Image (cartoon, rainbow, N blue to C red):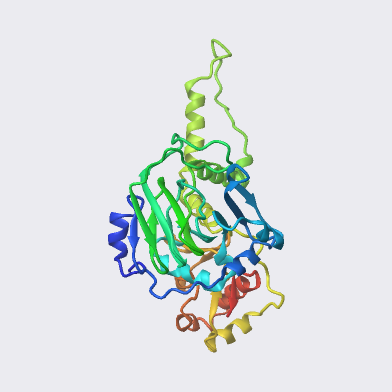
Length: 383
């Protein structure tokens, strides 16, 4: 498997992933951005789209942030230079952007987050900062100069008087200018500052990195939702204590045993994580279609080789147990056994599953029923 630009995925993961930045010249030769600046501004006016505007100097106030949706006239009020429009989750709304994510599946599906577009006129940026996640910065239009380098953390000095986490007294180690098709990879914690040389669009392909707090609270909440979590602590062998205020070691041993038993259940952990990691980021786009299908309709589509694809906001993953495979789609789980298990790998390999391979299941009522369910809930659609 290779990265865009022909670099070996194995070499990149070994040498760069979460270790050091890498510039990939012409990762996408001849790249044409699927959206224009005007279309980005139009999306930023929509209620369902997450968008922001950053102005470097807003009437004497440094690095001011404004959240969308915006009224159309807001864009005529902006200064001529030194501002940035950010549109999050662009892949949810533009199918061509969703297709771009397939170029990055050398990283597991559950780690991929979304694509953010950044439009800026000359001088526009969001200031020097660092992120807690991996990101590929693909230049889509115009030129942007990137300064980057140096490990940063929560103790790094910040600028005051701004809602943004702008680094103060930060000294970059490298400077590069990206042209359309060029790409820069940055690991978590690396300081960076991108400045538009002219009207430009940069696409940020970001990756999810749940915190330990997310994992602990998410899994324990999941365990608490199980029916046996309502059982009360029992102590039929209770003994008289010399001091009633003492919490005996036996009590701690029993609590430790109960918690370890629950937390070490790998099956429940896998089922929770599959659902957690595939929960859609946007509930506005994964919605049932107006016209639903029946399983026989799905069978006809498979026979006709009509391309079925993921909803742009959907997430797919699977986990193989010893005797069954769990397919996870948009926070739901589907347990597959026997001849049905290969469907999980087929559906999760990319946004456009292999239709020739899927056609082999056209006569399988259970598989057609599963695909019908996924289409009718909005996770799949016939292109």
